[in-house]
Length: 142
Length: 142
DNA sequence: GTGGTTCCCATTGACGCCCATGGTGGCCCA
DNA sequence: TGGGCCACCATGGGCGTCAATGGGAACCAC
Image 1 (cartoon, rainbow over the protein chains, first blue to last red):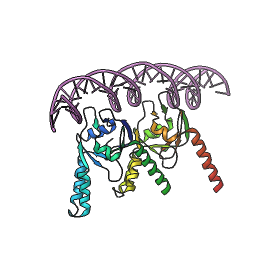
Image 2: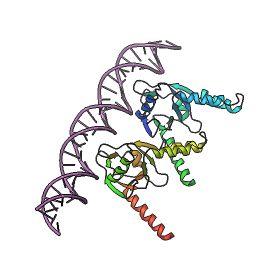
Image 3: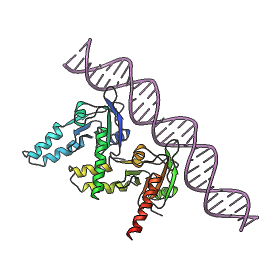
């Protein structure tokens, strides 16, 4: 499969590392991605990750707008100022930095959630909560 | 037959596996499906399963919306983050994971229910209950 | 040096793949 | 029509492999 799907919760070890689910690593390997672009999600309290191609896409989106518009400026602030590059260690783990902790509230466990063309890091309880809320809204509106 | 019909209840073994009814497996084989897309039903406490084409359908639904809207993001959270790919073992069994147990209440037995283009996994008592209730409501309203 | 990383190796528990068994229903044949 | 044979399905369990996790030691920057 070539997209990020499902969710899994892994523990952060004493050194602050956490294993990226093998399923997600397989998708990254297939796309020959070895350096991850990570950004703070625009909607949820989660950090999103994907290959560098996503950053290119974001930049093209900005480029198509008036460079002096407030929109384009805000967008750049989010994707450049709120984004970093990360890479995995030999075992497929990533270091959970303060960049991630502060924005998500993650402390000792991480929920990885597939989002199709990217995946996200959530504080486990926040993920559960948001998902059940989304389900309720769908049920109510249908 | 090319659709999922009827229902059957099977036992979960010590390793947490359960046989998918051969009737359903036959439908899957005919559609050349070897990897199942499973999602938590939007209405019932059941997990639904079908071929990956269902996921494509869901994704087209999302694709028609503004990708930065909270609506589209929540829907993606459900169908991507709340969906899993599963595959059957050589004997046509699937592993009943916590993803399934937590949402359905399944413990040691599973009721498989055909739903036409997909089938569902229910906790046996919950299925009986829901079915008899549906029957009553129909009788009352007709 | 000291703190923070990165690279490497060990452990263990889960999962996939394989083979075995038993029970049931269908089919054939007398 | 009755009995027996056979095929298929549900189920059980062994075992090898791999992922998730833990920790030591080298390495770099300050």
